[in-house]
Amino acid sequence: MNLIDHVFADFIQKGLSKQDILNMMEFYGLIAKFSFLPAEGERQQEYFVPSQLRSPPLDLCEMKTSDCDPCPLYLHFLDGFVPHGLFAQLVSRSIVWCCKCSPKTRPKLYQNVAMFSIGKQPIFDLVLICSKKFIKIILRSTTDSAVKARAVRDFLEDTLKVMSRELSWLRNLRYELCVACTHCLECSDQCSRHKSVCCTDDDCLCLLPLLAEEQLICPMNFGVEPVKICGLEKWMLVHEEEVKILSNFDKQEVH
Image (tube, rainbow, N blue to C red; front, side, top):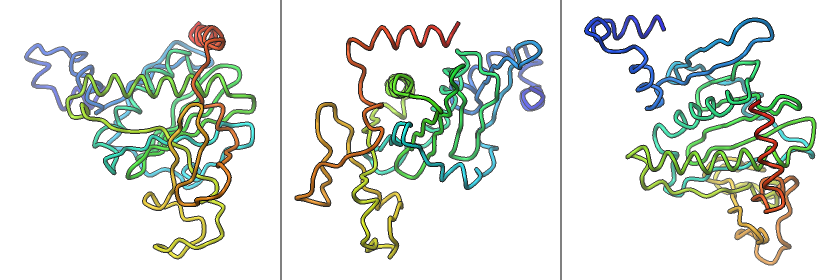
């Protein structure tokens, strides 16, 4: 708030509303507002400035999922790169979404990496990692997270649709939901480009589109069995009989 007072002092003195300035900066992803309720005390509100975030710790970037977690999900952008400004917008809107369930802890925000604690009991760790051509989504918990995984997927898809309508530079947004091919990750052959085993470079990582009711077939390994990925089913679209469960789950999170 002190930064806003300093930078826009002349405009504020001329009668421009400080809240209008904050709303405009939040709309364009320059700042991210976070509202939380500490264990003791009144609700607090803070603003994060994505452009001033420091580099993330290595263990966060290399976070692994357990067998009870959904497999990592990838937002793969078909034009070969994550559109400029999209990740900051996604982080800002993720903060707003997480605030709906009255979180007690702040999100951990870094350059191209964000980690949120969502839910009440149990608490889920949602991690977003932005690379050159995709955004990796990790969801971890100590309990079964199928319903929450579908809620996260629903939020991501809805948010990208809204962003493509509201933001002119994202009108032609093209992406697909993918998972990493476990066959290629476990392959013992070295990467021909980087001479390393299990290469995870953006351009070398084999990503398979997530399609309902279809088996995953690796285009790099013809003749092998369909790819099986642990935790994949937790990301799949909600069936009709699960709609009420998911709706009730979200209501419990908010209240």
